[in-house]
Image (cartoon, rainbow, N blue to C red; front, side):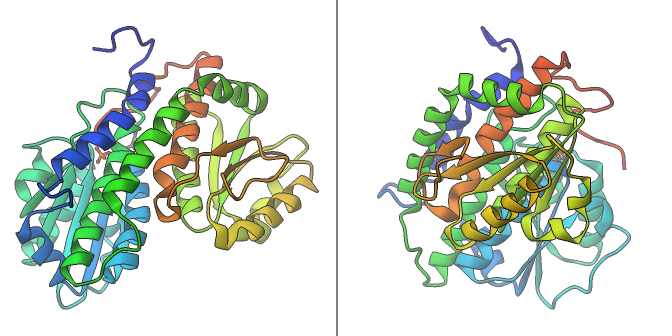
Amino acid sequence: EKGTYPHYMLKEIDEQPVVIRRIVEKYRTENGGLTVDKEIIDAVNSSDRIYIIAAGTSYHAGLVGKQFIEGWAKIPVEVHIASEFSYNMPLLSAKPLFIFISQSGETADSRAVLVQIKELGHKALTITNVPGSTLSREADFTMLLHAGPEIAVASTKAYTAQLAVLSILAAVAANGKGQSLEFDLTKELGIIANAMDVLCGQKEEMEAIATEYLSTTRNAFFIGRSVDYYVGLEGALKLKEISYIQAEGFAGGELKHGTIALIENGTPIIALSTQEHVNLSIRGNVKEVVARGANPCIISMKGLEEEDDRFVLPSIQAELAPLVAVVPLQLISYYAALHRGCDVDKPRNLAKSVTVE
Ligand code: M6R
């Protein structure tokens, strides 16, 4: 039930801190560490390459998950859009492990790949919010998101739950290989939950950004580099699916290879800067679009902020920044859709779970 909330989407955005804390509890050991079923970790650590298969928001979570798994557990990862993989299967490695990411566990495009790879005799792990769902039943292993039912068509809390679960999987796999992280993930996830609480308390600010940049625009661009690019893709998907504004996420460096031609006077550009190693380059990209008339909305992380930034995120561990950076984008999309009179929870032409290929 949505209780006093006007929409499920807003309720589900607000639930994110609780979901992150719940995930930590569910994957916690008695001595405060994190744990994942031994058979899952064995499957991860005995594979020579991981293939993540997903659609939509879950695909975007997979892109960030790749960074966790490659960075910490040092296993190569490919992330594939399910509907493309089916007919365009890449050359597989000798010992592949497939990870299906799906909130519903019912996405037909992902299931088609699961059927294909099972016929080839490969192992599969499903990361899903729905115990007993098709993708969970048909895979060898399941990790649950514990996010509670997600009703709004636009996925919010499932995305951050997917990132949290992927981070735990990557960290425990890394530990299993004797590689320890440079930070305490349990503690960092707690800091993230607190940061999400702070952001959820800043709705007026998010609404003001939506009013300023998105009330009347026909299009909007999200730019970022490194993981900020992946968060930008998710921000753009959120905005387009509920507000019907044509929105695209781009890697900052790609703009000059074509997209910059679309910039007109007043075109909103939402730029993310949460990563120190690309901070200067993304700010350079912002200057390029501003010189062509764009209206920039820079969202940066504390420690990297500059005077003209529109919003500054609380400081958190850089690799985990997507869990926090996505929250303002979710809220901005929500308010943009609201202001434009759209049906936030049930956008046109979309279904919550896409059970046809
Ligand atoms: O249930 P799944 O995670 O497999 O769904 C995949 C996509 O259909 C889903 O994420 C979709 O993109 C959302 N509406 C995005 O908000």
